[in-house]
Each structure stands twice: as structure tokens, then as C-alpha cells.
Image 1 (cartoon, rainbow, N blue to C red):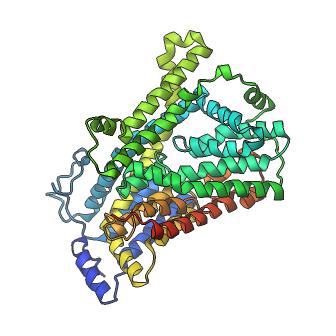
Image 2: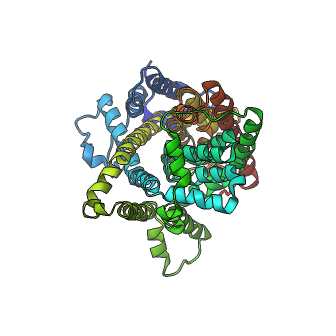
Length: 510
């Protein structure tokens, strides 16, 4: 059977839909590629970057006659991969590779700098003690009796610019130290901190997953940040309620774990405030990007004459510039603390900072590769005509696009474990289905939120986050399943209900 040409696919699918006979080949391409990704990552232990980029090429091969790249569809990065296709018109294998590289370049170029800067900010927040200062200041305001709320707020805020695993490494010693102080509530402290961090990790840019969702769906980054924060409030409340319930019902004791000695805990408890940077300076790297980017988005939504200052606000509120400024503050604070604690470093400060930032930039490079490969996969899924097929099926059976986005992302999340890979797959599918979102009866931000909440679903033993929580907290596998896994599933379901309701009462349709 000859596979349908992508050039003729759209009118053919439209005709088929009208006749209630929908071609399922594009859907078969999607299914084959998703199975390939899941098997490659979970069974063959292939790196996520390789699994996604190979899946993109596989989608192109299965699609059949791909269109030639020309001056109209060449992207900014195409000149780097020699896209002169005049002598390759009939070679679909090579065109599959070239189109995949186009998607990779566009995605990596769009979000690569922000991811790298987020990694720098996270490292400097930890190394300078700024993150510790934020937590301590919240403790002073709320008191130790409300330590659960403090850890929840800390996890919630710090997971916006810092990767979840990093936040958990940072805050778990504080949770253990607080439990030593109060003599109780260890389960509540761990679950409150981890659950809140998981929410903003999947819902609020500039964390790589939600950043890519917003970028792929062409949602203004400020709008995405505000929507993600607003949608996260109710799930955060649920985290606190469930954390207290787990603590009352299970009362898991604090056990010894590798890497956190009594001396480490004592150093956290006894550290002087004078050894930490000030609260205002500590908060700038977290607050400035959120405020600056969101402010410009609010002004844009007002649609009025913004005055002579607006071009400058627009410049400083651009995601790359705002993150660059935040990173500069974070690095400066880190440098000042290094010199304060060890004045002999003054003459060798640049080298020391470079060494400190080497590891997080390596980590950011891997994340950029994975998200870029995800962009390639999403682009090839669109070229395969999957969007038209899914749209026809959804229209025929009256399936909500929000439910479809959540379900597709949740299935991939449960199957292979990674929330980021699930978001990449889910948004690639939905971008193919909704296009520019003009046909929706609500704002595309609800699709953004649905993909984010879908990626939170059921963290279990194929998820690296599951093992980070289990090992560092000292929970058993069974205890982690009964707390962490149940909690994330509840968050995901509440988020789905929340956005289904608000998409009807506050559609924000343009």
C-alpha cells in the first residue's frame, strides 16, 4: 500500500472526514513512533535525545513523499545543514533527516539560551546561600509551626528557575533539620516541599518543559507564566492538605540516608544569617524574570498606547534579556559570597566561577539536546498529517481537545517516566491538531495547561524523580508509592478538572 503524499493529505483528509471515512495511517505513524520512544527509553535504555531524534526521522520515513524545503519554508538555522535539495527531490530518506534537523534547530535556537541561563541561576542560588536565605526568611515570617507551608512555598518558588531534582537536593536537608527541631511532621515536610516543586516544574516557565510547550503553541511567555502560576494555586493547596493527611495516617519516621550526615544537618541549623546574602538580593534572580516578562505581557494584552518607555520595558521584559539579567545578579551574588567566605579567591575568581558553572551547563546542554529533538519529533508528526487525523476523530466523536491533550501526555508520562519527554510528545501532537488555535472556543493557554498537568500524572518506578524522592527522603518504595505517586496523580486530575471548568467560564477567546 502506497503511503499518502503530505502534499495531498490535507484535502484528502477533509474529504474523508466529510464522508465519515478517516484515513488512520497518520495515526498509525504516531502510534509506531510513540511505542518506539517508550521501548527505546525504558527497555533498551537509549538516551532520550537519541530516541526522540530517531523517532522524528522514522516519522518522516513512514510519511512517504515529504515536501522539498524551499525559500518559503526554510528556517533560520537551515543554512547550517546544507538544505539545497535540488538534487535530492526523490530521496525521502534524506529529506526525513533534513526536516528533522530543521525542527531540531528551530526548537533549540528558540529556548536554548533560557535553559542555559536557568541552570546558571539555579547553581548560583544554591552556592551563594540565596536559596537558603529565602527559606529562612519565610520561616521567620510564618514561624516553625507553619514549617510545612514554608517548605511548600520554598519548593513552589524555587522550582520556577531551578530543576526539580536540584530543588529537592537543596530542601530535603532543611526538611530533615526542621523535623529534628520539632520532633514531628517529617512526612508532611517532605511531601509538601516535593509536591509543590513538582507542580511549578511542569507548569511555570522558564523550566524547560513548560517553556517548550509555550514556545511550540506560540503562547506569549508572560501569559504562560501567569496562567501557570494561577493554575498552580489550587493544586498547591491540595498538596498541603494531602501532606498533612499522609503525615497523620502514615507518620513515616525520619531514617538515616546516604549523603546527609548529622554534621550536614547541624551546619544547616546553625548557619548564621550573616553568612548568607540579603533577602532582596537573593530574591532578584527568582522574581525579576517573572515580574518583567509578565509586566510586558499585561501591557500587551491591554492593547493601548504604552508610551515612550514601552520599547525599553519590552526589551528588558524579553525572556532572553530578563533571564540574562537575573543570571548576572545570581552570578554576582555568588561571586561576592565566595570572596566573603574565602578572600584568597579574589585573584582567581573568574576561574573558580567557571569551574562551579561547568557542571550545570553540561546538564543544560543535555536538556537542550532533548528538547530540540522533541521539537524535531513534533515537527515530523505535523508533516505526517497526524493533526488532521486526530482533529477529524476528535470532531467525529466530540472529544474535548483539553481532555485529548491531558490524556495523550499522561499516557506517555506513565509509559516512559519522564515528564519532559511526555510534555514534548503531548505538545507536538496538540500543535499538529490545533494549528494556530484560531478554531478553538477558548484560549490555547488551556491546551498549554492540559499538557502540563498531564505530565505530572503518576510518578512511579520508571521515573527518575521517584527515586530521587525515595532515596533522599528515606522512604521505602511502598511508602513512596502510597504518598508521592498518589499525590501527583491527584494533582494531575484536579488540574484537569480545573482547566475544563475555567475554559468554559473564562475562555479568554480572542
